[in-house]
Length: 94
Image 1 (spheres, rainbow, N blue to C red):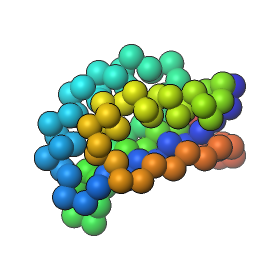
Image 2 (cartoon, rainbow, N blue to C red):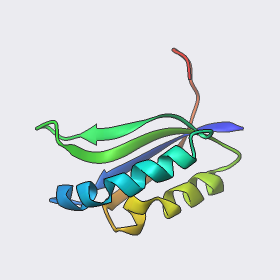
Image 3 (spheres, rainbow, N blue to C red):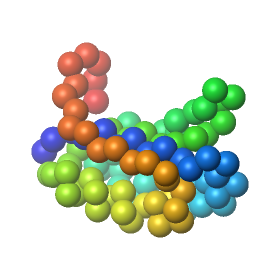
Image 4 (tube, rainbow, N blue to C red):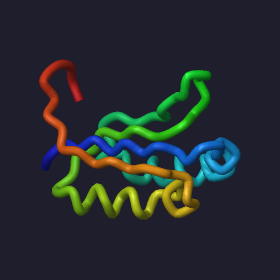
């Protein structure tokens, strides 16, 4: 198993879409707690939700891509940009 960062950045002016889809997104994330080490919303300069950040433990990048593809936020077209990177924890606990 490896660690990955999944950073998802909302399209501009999409807070209404985020809020309309949030309950389904949270339920989906709850179903995948075993692979989610840390997760939460990214905030903009006004402290409004503007993206999602996950640190995931997965077998492969493909598994992270599949996780993201099935996320209700992704299915709703919320994200304008998604980045997946390998991650190595050096300080702190995950």
